[in-house]
Every structure is written in C-alpha cells, then in structure tokens.
Image (cartoon, rainbow, N blue to C red; front, top):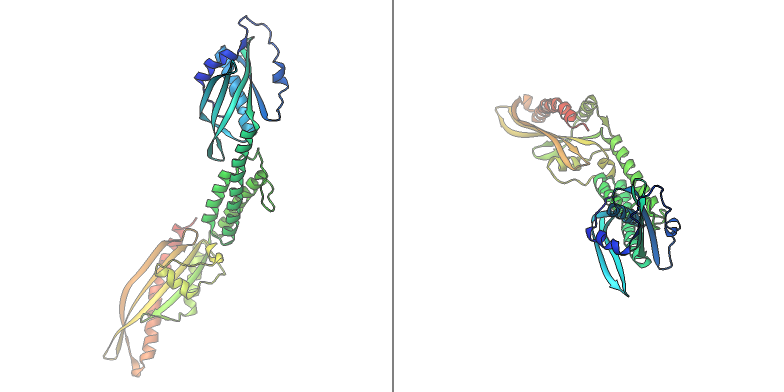
Amino acid sequence: MAKSTHPILLGLLAAHMACSTSAATNRAPAPAWFERPSHGPTTLLFVGDASDAPDEAMARQRAVERALHELTLFAGAIVKTDSKSFAAERNGQLDQSVELSVEVAGETMTVREVTIEEVVVQPAPRGFDAYARISWPRKEHEALLGARKAQAERAAELYEQALGLRKDRLYADARARLKEASRLVGPKESALPISHASLTNSRILGEAIDALGTEIDAEEKQNADVCAVGVVCAENGRPATCESHRFGATQDSVKKAGRRLSTEAVSNDLARGILSSESPALSPALRALGCLVLTELHLDQVAEERDVLYVRYRAKSLVYEPRSGRIVEVFEVPPGKEGFPILDGQKQRALEGAKKRSFDRAQDQVLRWLGGALSRTRS
C-alpha cells in the first residue's frame, strides 16, 4: 500500500491522545477495543497498530495508516498518496476525520467521512507502541460498492464482446476489450456479485477474462505460421484463367519457407482486391491465419507486326497479414516485352505460347523473392 503522511492530522491527534512518557521495560497490553473490534449497524470500525516506533508521532502515524489500510482492503481499494484531514469542534469535542483518494479498478474515487475515534500511544521496550481506531459510515461503503459493481457489470459486457470478437478471429479487438475488462473488474480478493448468466461474481469474471486471453494467445500462436495462397491471372486488363500448376508452385514455395499451408481457399475476387490495396472483408477462418500469399500475373498484347506477336508481361506478389490488416511484403516484376512468331497464321496458338513463357518468367522471379519475404515476416 502506498503510504501518506498527514502533518495536520499528526498535530490534531494530540488532543485525542492517552499516552505515557515513562520508560517502559515491558510491553503494555493493547486496549480492549483493539482486541475485539466490531462493526455497528450504521458504522464500520477498523483498527491498526504500530510497534517499537522511534517516537510518539511516528507511532501514531503508523497505527492510523494501518487502520486505513484495513479499511481499503475491506473496500477493495488501493490508497493513493493524496489525502486530506479535517478537524471541527462539535458538542464540545474535537471531531477528526480523513478524506482519502483511492483507486478502484484503475478509477480514482474518494473515501469520505472516515473518523479517527481514538489513538493510544504507550512506551515500549524499544520505542513506542500505538493503537488506532477509525470509523466509516456504512452508507459511504455502500456507495463505493455501488460504483465498483457498476464497473464489474461493464467488465462483464466487455468480456462478452471479446468472446464474439474471438469467434470472428478479430484478436486485436478482442484483446483490447479484455484489457479494459481486466482493469474494471477490480481486485479478485474482494468479489462482488454480478448479473452475468454464468459468471456469478467479479472474481470468477476476472478468472474468465484471464483464461480467454490465454486461449486467444494460444490460438493465434498456433496459426502464426499458417498461410493461404491465391494466384490470379489477367490478360489485356481482364481476369483470365490461371494454369493450376502456378498455384501448386506457390504452395511449394511457401512450404519450403517453413510455413504450413491452410486448407482455406482465397477467392479470386478477394485476391485481386488485396492486390489492388482494397480493404478486404475476410472470413473468420482467413482472419485466423498468419498470412495470405497472393500473386497476380499480367499479360497484354502490344502489337502484331510481320507475323510477330508482341506482348508485355508483369507481375505483383505480396504477403498480407490478417491479424494487423497490413501488407507486410510486396514485390513487383517490372514490365518485360517479348515477341513471338505467328506460324501458319495461328495467332491464338502464338498467344498461348506467349502467355505460358511470359508467366513462367514472371513467376520464377516471384518465387525467388517469396522465400526471403516469408523469412522476414516470420513471427
């Protein structure tokens, strides 16, 4: 517990004090009220003590702070360093009270109307012993509990949201909800009932929050090296059919880089969208993966001169990270131009040959790049 010094309070306590200044050889017994503290119907009582303090002032301070510590443990709070003490004459008697700034689940709250009922200081074998008794209205405790319960209920809502986000494999968003829920749920040592269907109190909720975070970490780690592959082709600016071996060659390259292959399919539309830097709408299964490896091969007819078909080819490949929604590696094969003879007037045959040879050249460059790219992006 963070301790605070109350200089005003120390001076005021002298008016309350019953103490002896004679040297002591034996430790005097504690007051009866210290041994048997009991709460009243409208008031809560807390006691604290100090042993062998070097002087009377230090003994008083330590005893009061110990009593305040017991109060905050009871309330499920943590004392902050700032506090205020007050004194007033009421019915001919000096009334001393302390107002504490405390922290509950990361939120600053004020504990009011704490009254110092009595402090006893007596000589001890190696200094001074002290005993303090403080009181706190039950209504103030109930108000603090109400604020804590509202926080715990909000934590339960965030936990439910995290469950749904985990199901959709939106791990980063789920973790953000769990972090806030963990902050709000409060101390596990001071459980409060909540209205959740299966998690009956804040302690059980806190344990569920921790468990869900562990499950998400394990699930994400398990999929960190799993990649899905997509290969698309385009001819004269329009989607075209890719030969199946191009997909297989990319899968082989992914495996050689030490990654595991996903059975999830990447649609051509999705692949083209990501390759065009569009924000993708991924399925939960794809969002769970470590990466998507996407390649697009382009071929354009440029000209036909003297029975020669001229074409231009290019390619783009990238590694997309679903968990962050970022393209983490990208490679482009610069445009290359080639000519292919048109034999016996068979232009389509020349085009097919041009397509195969040009795509082979482009994909060879992509596959050489891919191994290094996957090594650089390994988790």
